[in-house]
Length: 236
Length: 278
Image (cartoon, rainbow over the protein chains, first blue to last red):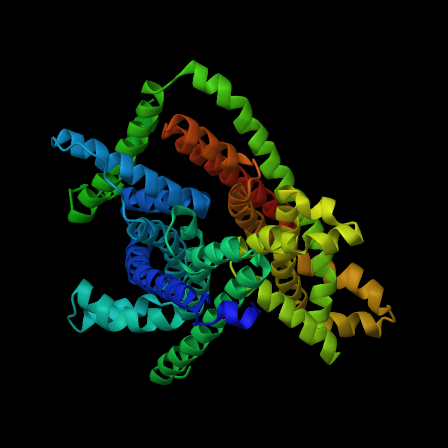
């Protein structure tokens, strides 16, 4: 069989399973993004809090999840959650094996890693926003939450966007690790095809190219977002 | 005696009273979070203590040490090889020669745009498809070994990242430095070596440190292509004993490794930027 037919959608072609892999990878990355951004934002808030105990807790979070290899974090979450829930099940009088959804495990592990890096990006973005912005917000009677939401956050996004788009690219690549816990993403599907057809170079090469295309597509989207956010900003 | 007593008294009077530490909401949240972390860590340590099994430690302790040595040799050899390789790539990224620039750009784009794990798989499983050709050229001994494949994939990958670090650092040195040296009649090569590079390396130091840490973390991937590094032995220990402490020990070792390296790097940075502190 020619390589076109192997990658195609016809009889004996692996196109469909690879396409489903792409769907899984993209869904996982998109599902992780909001969690990671949200946790990262709050961890960044914690890192610049006046209360030392909050700072300590936030710094421990980043130290741990930036220091562990992503693969190990994934295994820790996957097997750890399995054991934890198993123990909980025994406590509640439920016996039998409980399987953890590898998609959820991947989402939490990637989210933890992403958020710890995102918190650093948000933190440096926070430092780029002058104190006067907060004071101005308070002076016109906005509460802390309102100042954050209506005054600081719109500016913060503009400053943090380059760093965050970098992290998105890293996230997209890191999702390939979930193939190690059996989630049928791009790498898993191409790996299966490679083992069955013995055309490993073709399929792993295709996987690499798909990731490249995803990166290029996301850079288009990021450029569009960047244009929008800079257009809404005041030129200084 | 009385004087110091008076001083102490006036000091006590003149200093404004410390604001009462009240249990504000943020303070409570902070303490709860710290307590959560502390409980988690103490719980894990207690778990490790309760699960302490001397036979297990004696069996897998030396293996973990072996794995750690493998991880470190793999990371440092690929970083050094990558550093050598990054010089021509960085040169290609800065050259005005269109073909050279295109090749360097493509190289960097490919290795930075695809997952490291896919590159490692491509190098190990993919290249073995060309076994007969490689045997013919006499390179099969290299690509047969998972360690070498991991090493090559890592070196090529880190070369792309290091080339970008190098390029960014060199371009961060202002053009005036080149012009100043040229006006003194210093040749381009000497200018680069004696004027530009020392300034560029200070800028590059922090990204280089991050790259080393990323490589240490990324090296866990080789466990998936049957190399017994720290992660490889961890997986082995877990698959044999089904004891979760296998992963916990690995986590502790990796965390310690990264933290130690980070502190060493901070120390180096403080030391070589001494002359910049005013």
